[in-house]
Length: 360
Length: 254
Image (cartoon, rainbow over the protein chains, first blue to last red):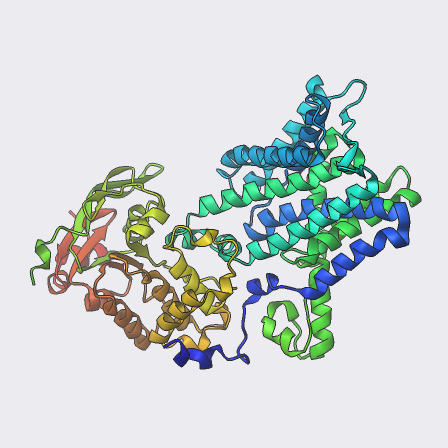
């Protein structure tokens, strides 16, 4: 009887809805991402590596925010907590326990971030919307304050933990900033790929549906709390991955990594880059990092002003971010005004136009 | 017809619900037999929707017991109630507007499987078995050609039908329907009721402003007024009820 219903599944019928579109596999974005990662060191040298490293790390933080905000509909203002905690965990393991294997340290640090998220999530998920935001914000500030107050979170003479470095990345492979970059690149791409798969699975759809109508999901038999909780822990772990790589690149963990500045950057990345698209966080992170870099030349002491301005612009921009703008532009180019609201139409419009629309 | 001798599917015992100082439900008791369809009527603010919410623990009652198939389910988590075989529809259309019609159905079918949302490596859209099931269900109500469209593009009547259909998935033993005919034309209303009748294995608790809808489908009717059960009987008995007429039309009450 499945055969009998084929006509309704014929290709000229739109295949997916709007939310589904956001999850669609997008080869162009992957090629662009991997291409940029590989080419950057050879074109821009050490500066390129430093900046690209920061972009990737910030993109991971953005992805962590996106899982919560873009999928589960939970506006977190405290993902920095897990980002920073992982860096601190790495520092403590090296400085106090003398661990010297970067992979073991990273796994332990990320696990700690996930555990922390598992604990915080129990409390934060009792609230919703604005209160959720405030609670996550408070967690981040709490950890940042603890990190700056207690000596156990400091190496002597520094307001943070220094010496996050290793002799070897693997037997015979020296620990250099180049090596850290390639590790970061590999981990980021792998993580993005895994997340793309997970987020278009029933898990991702369930989160989106909960965001749209939690009560209905409950009434369909979904354990919405559990799904949101898992999303919270996963997000914490992803932020932890970003955080440990950040600490590896800089060799130091500082209280700011945990606090509101970092958390806000994660949110900004998604606001600028666009949510629920593979390229969104990467693009957003690129804009933030490069703008900070440029602003630090032009306004050496006042570059945060530029970032502040960026917040305002991003807030007024579109809710789809840069990635969304590119998709919209593409579809305008291909369907030439046939459709004014590219983003609110179905994916079929974009596909019919022959466009591999989701470039980023 | 000896179904009345089976143990009741639902037993509501002395249910109380308060919001602040206001008693929204006061000492409500009734039961529903297997395959029985019970209507709850009453003027605005009588506590009808509150009653449905209470049964689904969203939120649960302050006092009293709800027993489903012999098991105490008072204040049990909503999703567990659904998996046990209770489902509900909502007063307002509650479909996922941004998902396709088919995806809506797939979620409705998947929700009863505890681990469904955690099949993290499977692509939601290409779950063939689920698609086929969803498609069959849509076919039965004439929505199959629209399966791939975003649910928001459906006409209002179709949205309600999809909503109802989603609530009826998974062979529930008890279906709670909140105003299933609201905003529908006479013809659409008929279709909606047929859809409910087609699931004859399920007991039904229906509340509706439209008395004809309730009279048309319910075996038995409960009159609710100011959170209390004031009348109970067959459609014919209820239509003659003086007590209920007073509740509706606001004649002076003793």
